[in-house]
Image (cartoon, rainbow over all chains, first blue to last red; front, side, top):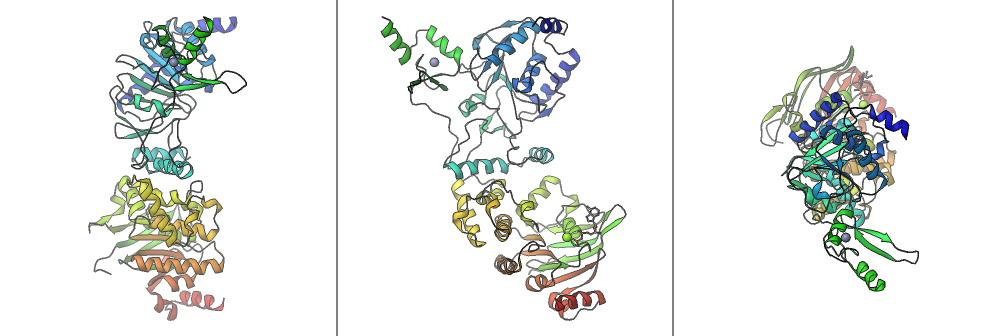
Length: 297
Length: 258
Ligand SMILES: Nc1ncnc2c1ncn2[C@@H]1O[C@H](COP(=O)(O)OP(=O)(O)O)[C@@H](O)[C@H]1O
Ligand SMILES: [Mg+2]
Ligand SMILES: [Zn+2]
């Protein structure tokens, strides 16, 4: 651990050298100029394995300034190993302010969720992307998928949804649900639940996507149209939940199942831990908390 | 048949480096006409077909196609987007090996429906109904609609490939040895099917085959190729019954001996 910290200490602000940051910023600018288009970039080795979001980390490193406030979430939570490590990494290499509060953050790096709290102008959401190519599922040839994007040949995306309905009776894709950006490029929103797709549409915040292993960056600038693909007779729908959050009573949020005991006890709680805590701090209370208070009395 | 050709081919040559693929081929194809390109292996049939279908760029020569609006267009001067659109709407291409023309990992229904979705159809129920109709037309049980072609026999795969191509009502279909990989009994059924479809739909077709019996059964007119060049062409019955070139006579007599 000591060896690592002294090693890191010799690196530039935010770990990457200025040359690399400039290269990544150019890719980001191009991505912003062509919403939804995957811009190739020379992805660098980062001091963490690929599955840890090296694409997102490089994007964040390239856009960070000393005054930024960083929040990192994984599956909506600030306290998972992945989120804690990335936050600690930036604290160390950029000596910057970090937070778990969505409203306080200027940059939010995420894996798998968009915060429940509405993002506002000036905020940037950085997604960690494992596989950026939405057409990869049916067309493994990179030359061909590039041509399809260039010529706007997206029939294949609907073939995938068709297969979904043929097999399951409905569109069973729940994560990485494909979207069309600004009426032009079809984009994979990374493995976020489709529940979050509507939040991407006309968002006030800048959304940046980094895929480290696949060396691609793409973007959705603020106030951009993001439409989920569907069929007329099978329209896009987000997941719904029968009950509100067991801890804070929130409705219309994305819930995770939590197993309570080995007798089948379970509850559904906000996947966005900051949102849940904030609601509880403001006096909101779900059935499980109410029950706890009762028994404590 | 109307009074204007659908395809006009002038002096088309294709060289692979110094090697000749095909040389100085000229002909016209008329609406509703089926043309067979015959010749022994290596004579340049596939090369010519691929040039016509814009899958290969000819070294020289011109190929013009009459668009639905009646305009004659030089294919080499068409943009890639428009050419690819033409290929998946107004044209069909049936490969000898069905795996080259099908998506083996998606259902039969999606294979047939893909072109419809590519041209913007967005109603699942309608796409599925049309796919079902086409499966019926190519004699595949409709209850196989959700099966992948992996589970199909060679003959079924080839019929599925044909359905996938015809679903957008193309006017011109290219076929490269469509019965090539099939058992003789299966070949007969497929030829029958192709003949009926071509007739019922009024399709124009260019069919490459080394099998003169296929040419006899399907085509109105045929071209005989040797060493990359067309050495004889004419109405199919005339060429087969009264071949003028010595080489064609040899081909015809050898098939008669088989
Ligand atoms: N990709 C290629 N590269 C080099 N030579 C080729 C290629 N394809 C075909 N040829 C050559 O062109 C000639 C015509 O081949 P082809 O068009 O495949 O004939 P056919 O379909 O009648 O069997 C042959 O001599 C063949 O070896
Ligand atoms: Mg051939
Ligand atoms: Zn909650």
